[in-house]
Amino acid sequence: MVLKENKKIVATPWRMRQISKELHELRGNLKTMISLIIPSGEDIYEVNKLISEKCATAKTLKCRKKCVLVQNVLSSVQTCLKEYKKTPDNGLIVYCGVVSLKGNREKDINVFFEPHLPIYTSLYSCDSEFHTEAMEKLYNVDGSLGYIVVAGGSCLFGLLSGDTRDVLYELHVELPKKNGYGGNAASRIARSREERRQLYMKKICELASDYFILNNKSVVNGVVLAGLGNIKSELCQSHHLDARLQAIIVKTVNVKCGGKAGFYQAIALTNELRSDEKLTKTVQLLREFEEETLQDNDKFFYGILETVRLLKKGNVKTLFVWNDLMYTRCVLRDSYRPERIFYYPKEQDETLSSLSMSEKIEREIGMKVFQKSPLVEWLVEFCKNTGTTIHFITLRSEEGRRFIEKFHGLGGLLYYKEE
Image (cartoon, rainbow, N blue to C red; front, side, top):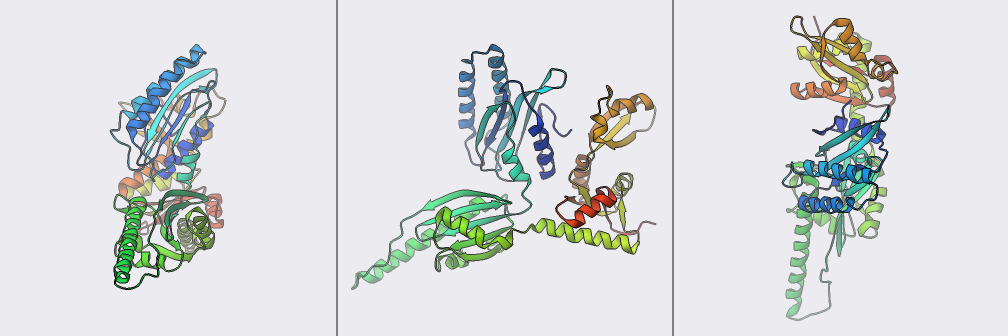
């Protein structure tokens, strides 16, 4: 189980996916499960003020048990927020509540983390379940596109992540129009109009950097410029536009209007860009893996034990892991014997037996469980520390389905042939 009570979590796409699945399955008898999402840029002091107001409101609840539980959960939320003096750059997600377990038991869950991508959704909910929809949008993003829809009187910044369309910001201006004045005033008016237009372009470029660049890196895979007439071309060539964004402009399109209508039209005109680039790259690597297996030159591997052995030797170039590989890694230790490690399917811990799989191993081996964690979580951390490239495999491609069926969802490519 990835999710643990009273824990600050370091978010990665895989970890967020697992946490979201586990949170989504939890339920409470009373509406005492709080979901709090603080978007990037929001003042955390205002959020603390909101929680204090909710605490005061909770005291008026007629049900004494619910009153106490809600106050305790809100107090846990406040404790989580005390960890931060300001809202993190990517926003903050907090889940606190009392959940029901089998056998009429209850457990407190308090988890909070900064997501791996900026989140712009604001949410406060006190319900009988956790609301994880915004999290699902984040971890389902393999590649996202930023849209700048510019017109003479407005500019919209949008984000397309999978099938989710978000309007990040919309700027409205009033630019002077061309007129028929002549004489000595004509050149002055034209110059003033051009200066106002250049200031408008500069402001757009500054906002583009604010919304699409974070920690000196682009948060989108590509940028689409949409607009009326030549104004989008001016923006594309503007020296005020950040070079990191200019390098990832993938298309410019003509739209009939600005604002949200222009944003949706631009999305419709760029359907071919929505193909999953990350999936395509993974498919190409899986084909390379299949070619290695056909050549039988011993530069590939598969299986849990072989994977762990080669990772520790540092000979793994690329590792493929099935997204839903549900195995547990169990480490046993005592004072007299060498450490022993076991791997077993997660469902063996979820049988109706009174003893979990780890407890059965303890009894049979006579050693105590020192550490127990999902195998995929251990693989992610190990690859992060060693620099091994890891690719998560899904059922979305034919190559992925073949890999999962034939190699049970775990394998990879080597740097060099094993002797």
